Image (cartoon, rainbow, N blue to C red; front, side, top):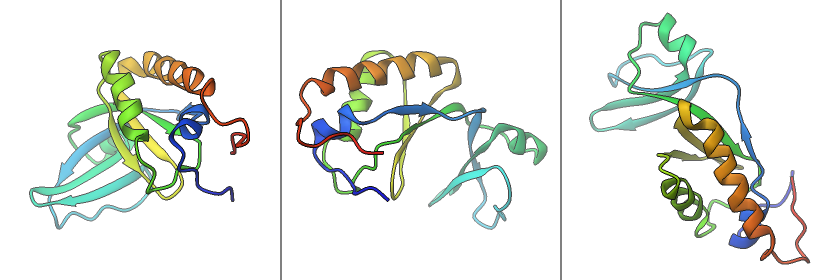
Length: 145
């Protein structure tokens, strides 16, 4: 496993966004809902209910109403959970392009969910951000994983 990166310029230059196959949905379920099995990507408990992110086909099969249909982009750089500025940088770039994003930070990577119809533009925006940061990244820290 590669070491987590915390330097912002290195993170941006090393993001390597990757579009995951398929369509994903955000949905809200009651707190007592059983959420397990194929198709579940993430869950989060809120006061109002449990938010689930899951494959669209699995949601349809379970008659779960989607709140948001999304494409899933993974930044393949191993980002440090304590790194400062990565989320702000890509959210600003996507926002400037008129693309909303919902972000999940996991132990190794950041995962960005964008409206499915904007997936291509989102990838291009992130790649442009990566290219611009590549010029500023320290040459002594080559991109990892």
